[in-house]
Image (cartoon, rainbow, N blue to C red; front, side):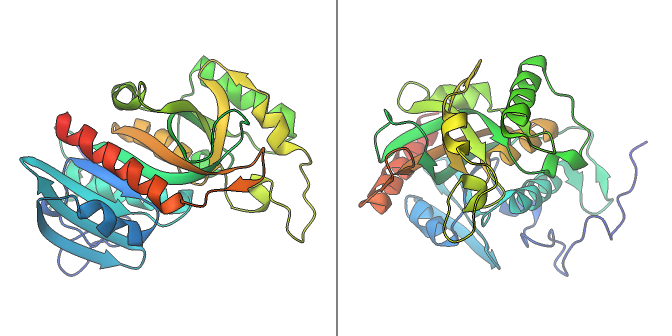
Length: 289
């Protein structure tokens, strides 16, 4: 018998919506584009033929509408894996928990979630402003230490290798994209393995005023080969999306505009144009699929 989830664990607002997103089940589509920046939400929904509603709470902004007969939502997460955990947990609750009885539904829904983001590239041969789809991702934060999770042998090999190489006191986590969604973009975009960090500066090897503990981290990671490909880029969300998405049974893929090249020390002069190109590619693919 399904347990009743206490109101202190899954908090609902006065309108019966999930607490942080402020959404009710009918407000979210089964296909969702997620972005980090709230200001990027209207840039995506501008492609919709029809907009049903808009909702905003802090950095969490949601627009739901349609292109032709295809219903879509676009939602901003803010930055970091902590926000990703909040977003995915509440999205899952909207489709897989009866919010009135507070019980998990017998028939579960698998969402299609496509992340559009920006990141810095590690590899010299990938050009600035390239677009990349992540086949897998490595999390350098401790989020998944709080969840029961079985790791495949191929993922465990990468986790152990990186832990030894960087001398980490904790084990990083490694997770794959949805094979189906990855296949949508594999032929058109660069692909590789994304590194998800718990910060933008030190955790991504940027030294401003504070000295770094892990000297040469970027160079070491750039040289590693995995069965999923080489490490290609740094950002702050993808690994959490992949690991939690897999546990919850949702299809997840992450796409990045590579607006910095860390190996060359360069930054894009047209990064907004690059992001808009990526948005257009995703919209085109979703309307074709």
